Image 1 (cartoon, rainbow, N blue to C red):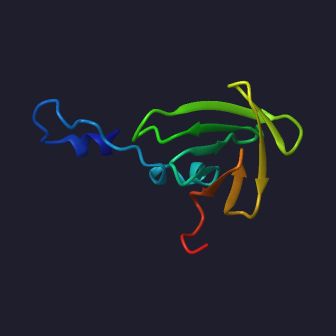
Image 2 (cartoon, rainbow, N blue to C red; image 1 turned 180 degrees about the horizontal axis):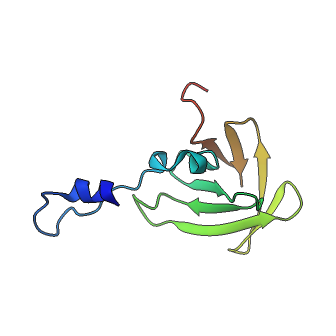
Length: 111
């Protein structure tokens, strides 16, 4: 919160008060369990639960939808929006969820 207060220091009026939410500013332990697709969608793993939160779309730039997905027999996941999605993991860095490629936030940029 302090970061956002500093960001807004000196702003007069109510225009331009929105600040971007940046997944790369997450704590390292959350970055290790978070993947992002090219369109800004996020796939966030639950620690110790084996499930994911799928946020389809970029919530900062436009409308997005969030669903929670739990294992339904590998590689299938049952999601709270009523859909079953398939996951495949290519490497430590990349995963595909419902035919959308995701890249781990904590991965080095050169991989």
